Length: 414
Image (cartoon, rainbow, N blue to C red; front, side, top):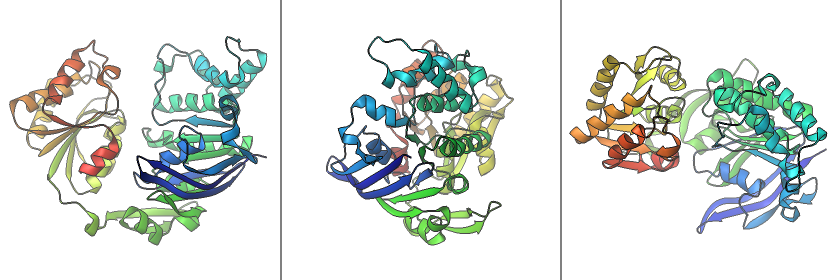
């Protein structure tokens, strides 16, 4: 039975302590959620466990074996990772992507054998995508793509499965499905599943154990009942909230409110967010929670960010599902931009359907002095599906915009 032990782990980046005195013991079959504010070290902890980063101090054991002494291939046979940002080649089929998980078992130029095919089939069936095996990855929904990535990780036959924010860009129904799937896999396969999560209520429902981080240290670890108390969450997240008992007999959060003494002085009153496809969900939530008057558009009805905006009570400029942006709604969008104090352009892909959003922002930026912020987590070249038209317009916007390279940078500013 596999077991993971982390002893006195510490990691620093450019002399800044990111993790300190991390000690964990996790049993096989447990589903563990890592919680904490942005910058608390959640992703860094995962990347130390999988050895993508080398800790300055501490030891990590899997079944009593020091992972530092494992070869790269042996390590990949023990630990599999589903990262937060993954580029999938649009030309690969589902089965081809899952087969990549067998690489740790193959020698250079060695072909897959019958055992590899059996493992891949089993991995796909275990996450419910066997019927999709011949489909191109580009044809799948967000939830289906996430299942493919999990199947690829399972094809490594790991003892430990790590996932960095596996549900952050998914609709609520897919979020539930993925976490329910991970719970079942941990129990059925007797593997350790560790996931960085932001939705505390979903973490409470599905995780056996929670690890709450603050400033790179474990503030509290234990069952949801032990970790999710009003006192703990107030101390770690700086929020006043109320904990109630949900339908499942587990602690649930209601009525989160920021503590005024921790709020920054606002530079703006109203902010218009240009987003789509889930890229703006976190931005909308954060700005609204901070007390800004937020609007967004143009979004298609049913889009992930449209749903998030509706849940938050944010004003939305909307068009019918699956339709290109209309001239009428572009004019409304321009009105919202002109009447806001600032605009945030999220890290979204651009096709001909939403190109007008970019053009409308460009016109507003070049014609006036609108304060514009661009969240650029990936280059525009990887997000332009308009044969370079979006790139050209985007570059014009950047000449008068403040650029954030990560969501954390945006948080620090606002």
